[in-house]
Image 1 (cartoon, helix red, strand yellow):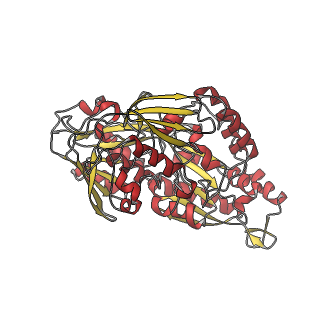
Image 2 (tube, one colour):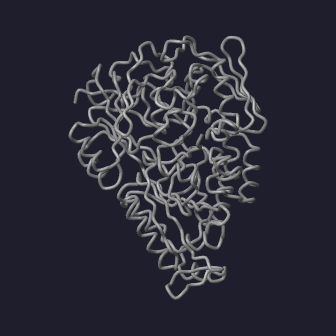
Image 3 (spheres, helix red, strand yellow):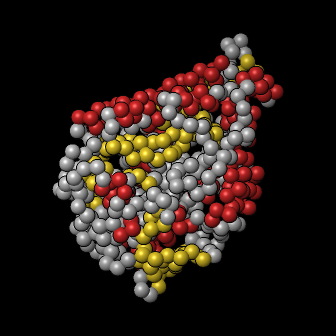
Length: 527
């Protein structure tokens, strides 16, 4: 089974440490709601296998919330609210939850505390290779069921944001826990909708469930204005998605760049969230150019990151400030300032010279007879701005004496490259989380295929700072979490360089976005 990162096809609305909002919010304002309607929503790439616990790629992550629930949710005010669990308490190295009464799966069977135990056991088993292990579920976690549909989850180490992590884990029902193969093209969850149709590469159809009353903060499918059907269309081109919104072919889509400005001028409804859009990773694996810290630093120093940010975001973004930037942010701060190597093309050239990477007669640098050649992977979900910024970066590196091969791939393809083939050297992929502990498995520990560390990073300074941060509970460890990130930037292990306010536009529909578009918040409007 493959591992997958929280990569950004919905322009970085992926692995958020939050997953819900209440019944109200903007979804109930601005027009008369209508029942029985269909909400048509665009995703930029087909997610492939639909098992909700085997990939945190953002397209699948969004889809999972239509058909699956989490134990807890986080609302737009960064407050924990109920989900499958009605009460919860974290004490020391354990969490105790009590499930709501009357929860049923889409086939009508009950969902029980024993099912929660089996979900946690599956994710916590390293042999399962779930990307949620260590991200949302602490390593070594064990769950037990008690009287009154209670669940106790224990874990050996400190997990300062464990409740926020559990808010990111879609729970699977008993039938699929026995036969996970059925989840490839079907769903088996407790969520507000059930999947009824899958046409690969084209669309997926979900139908609303009756009797659902255990949504975020007690949300119910009996609420007036919720769509009877949700159709998710695969629309790879952002301009096409914008045009479909305007023509009525879509009710919702994430659109950025120039098309976002065009839609904004027409006063369409838009729900917004802040996310990292530009994030540059280097492959440290043995034998790759990025294994040499001098190469990573030179490639970073050569770039005008401010200019790349403007090109990537079409002038509407902002400099990155930290890795865990998804709203609501657990540790607000700036770990980037003063830590990322400053632009200095002359220093970049000198650094490569000093490391033995000398330019030949063709201008391409080499060392020990091996040319300095990189495979530069970027996600096509970044849109036209991403393509332009990638070309700008590639041309700069070529002027440095680097041979660059650009690999433009959609989210599904890029996940395969990062976690399976490993055929990449520099990658522009966004891992978006809201609490810094959720980044740890991507930045340290076992590398692929045995872990989430797809860049093969080993940074003792980061590990030491993480150990200090994890010893504190909640936000008390934030200074050390930010210090840990700065260690990565100084070593040019990963470089965030652009944030953007990401907008999901709606037509004849309103909704809340809290990490993902919240299904129970959707209201269909007459106009």
